[in-house]
Image 1 (cartoon, helix red, strand yellow):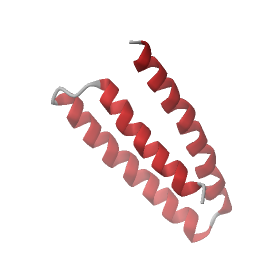
Image 2: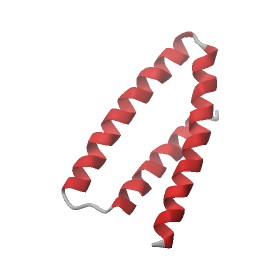
Image 3: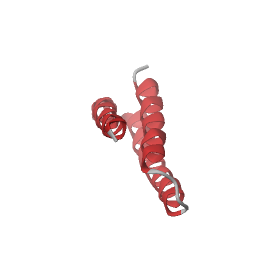
Image 4: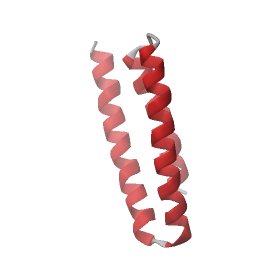
Amino acid sequence: MFKSWVNLFQLGAEAQQVIWLRTMKLAAGGPKADREAKLMLKEKIDTAQKETLKLMMGGSPDTMVGNYRRKVKANSKRLSK
């Protein structure tokens, strides 16, 4: 149970970094900001649909948090370039 809370806390901390990086990208404006905004929305909708379906089919919340963390880490890496 403790591991689940740590995993969830880490997701929150990592997501804050991505929010900050995205805010900087969007604040810069231009075509890159437009692409990032569209990618962000598409990614959020797609991931939420997939993870909700997995939960409905009996998936575990821990697995869902892990999947979200992988997405957040990938975004952090991409936005840090």
